[in-house]
Every structure is written in structure tokens, then in C-alpha cells.
Length: 221
Image 1: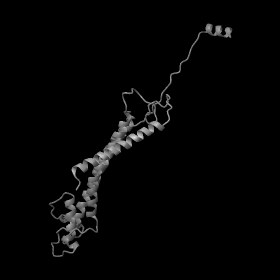
Image 2 (image 1 turned 90 degrees about the vertical axis):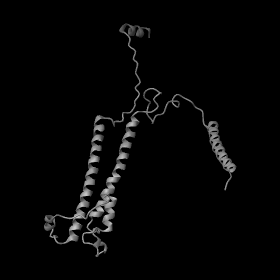
Image 3 (image 1 turned 30 degrees about the vertical axis):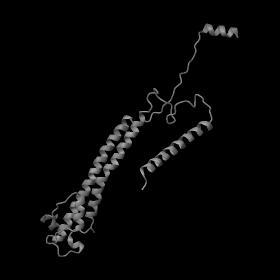
Image 4 (image 1 turned 180 degrees about the horizontal axis):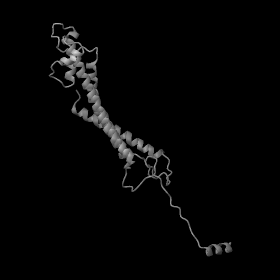
């Protein structure tokens, strides 16, 4: 194990080497770079565009609009993850091949309406910890001709519940995205996204002379 003195020595050596490397490169740049100052080279460079306003404002405010839009859409993508997770898990649960009841996983000794470990785990991931086995109404079961099949009634009811959760999450995503697009369209319509390029206009000075002065100039010529 290194002693405290060795650690301090290593840190000092690291700092000295880093500072020396920086100073050597700055000195080499100062000695080797060409010196050709002119008004064009001494102008302020701002992303290839002529500067606007006072030099005290060192950042173009138009960049803030772009930065804010980036943040908005970046946060929007983060908000998509919870909905996408719910949609994905609910879709897995509503799949026809998903084991819904315990008998689908080979546990034939369990009650016919007992949910499988897969279904219970998926519901827990969706935040539903206490769930009674879903069931169809007698009218729905009679319409599907599964009135006496408890296992089929539980399976169909669970898949319908999962499908409802999936479509609800998809609708939530659509509403959120639509509201965001309305705001984006409003900002676009107002012209806040128009990138007005800075153009310097040089005022042209014209000299006007009277007719008598023009005649005198022609005679003297």
C-alpha cells in the first residue's frame, strides 16, 4: 500500500507534467504561428455570420430558441418510455399464445380461473399487485359460447383487460404528442423558428451638386 507521501508525490508529478505539457504547447504556438494581423482577421467570428448588436452581448439570442426546442423534444422522448413500457407489457399479456391461467403453464391442479405466474408477474410490472381473476359477464360468455368453460372465460377476460390497457397507453401517447405538435405548429406559425440571417448593409453615400456647379466643372475641364 502506498504511503501518503508517495500519493502526494504522484499527484504533484501528475500536475507538473500536465502544466508543463500545456505551457510547452502554448510557447511553441506563440513562436511558430505566423503573425499577419489585419482588420478581417481581427473581426469577431460568430458562426460565419456578421455580428449583431453590442459586443457586451456575447451570445446570439436566436440560439436559445433552437436549444429550447431540443430540450422540449429530448424531454418528450424521455416521457415516451413509461407509456411504451406499459404498451409493450400489455401487448405481451394480450397475445393469443400467452399463458394466462395456471393450467397453461402445466399446473392442472390449480383452480381453472387461477392466473399463471406469467400473468401475475406482468400485472405486477404494470403496477397491479392485487388483482382478482378477470371474468366475463354471463351475456358475453354466452355470446362467445364459453359459458361453462371457466378457464376460457378467465383467459378471454384477461386478454381483453390487457388489450384495453395497451390501447389506453397508446391513446395517452397520441394525446401527449398531439399537444406537443400543436405548440410546435403555433411557434412555427408565429415565425419564431425562422432563422433570419444577419446581413450588414453598407450605406451608400451619394453626392448631389447643382446644375450651376456641374456647368462650372465642365467649363474648367
